[in-house]
Length: 440
Ligand SMILES: [Zn+2]
Image (cartoon, rainbow, N blue to C red; front, side, top):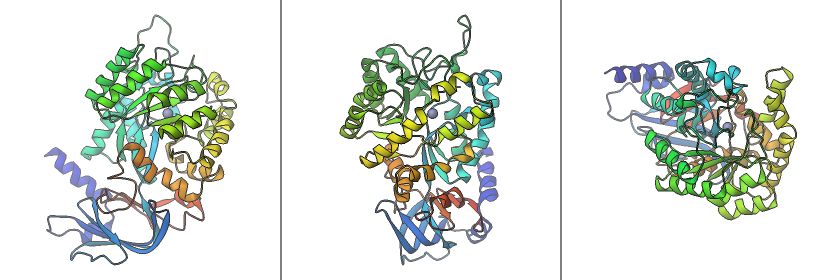
């Protein structure tokens, strides 16, 4: 009963007035039609004009120039706008709380898990309003906060993107995903060391635990990190044997694995083990490119983050050892991003949101174009490619009959000016309108 009333309250609060008025019929199915002036067909890499999308019960029923609009359908007029599939960010950290408190992970110890979880409610809302209807959330310091956030959004307690979550970081003790910095005789609570593993069998055990706890995919850290005390980005963490065991175990549960990896050896070990994507991927060498091509591994390169890390450094907000780790990595990542685009690698859109403010995520599109992608490629990285990486291409990533009605719209043409996508004016997730500000 409580759930029902919350759901309907949410619907009333966030559905655009025209939609709410026109859909208040007694018909059992909610049917909506969107008139799209321009529509980006990301699968074919083209733009169509004057399309109509018919949506029934959250999914696209039909799409085309002249589909019959069912009697009684609510009509949403986006005929002056460019309509795109909902965006998918493949590398977020929405459940770590407020960005401003997050420069040093150790700040997590100054807040309770509940405080961090409630701070994260705002992150989810910001992301959805920016046009991200789905995210692959790739790790959280307080284990399972992301599972709770995902489930609360799905229950309709508050609004946010559809989340696919990792549950915890699988990391070596003292490694990139560990909460380091405490004195040696301090024992951290379990949720802050949940995913630590130090052998092939421990890696398997952590995968089993996270699969049971509701993880949608597995995040492993195969090198050191920029934003972790006592860790270095070029160091290799986990052996090939450990990574092979982890990926094999994840496969038993149908879970894909993403690997955080800066250094070349850690990147190559993870690719050989069979991960679905390499996160960050700064120090890709020729062999790493060849292996990724051979294995069909996605590269998820967060090339905008350098701006935020260095700016925060100038403001004195970034710990000195993090800035030292970061030196030169940013430029190397951008060079290798351009190289990857030219080499035709599989590439997805990942911001590492949390490092930059949550509302900055769309700025990455212009950087991807600046460093070699066409606007269409940048959009595909956050739609069709991202859905493929998630293994959800049957439901997400493009506007096709049978898929979720995750639809956004912008004023202007993002294919001639990619910055247009930084101002999403209309957001629909699974047939429900969450934002409708056509004049923005
Ligand atoms: Zn990250």
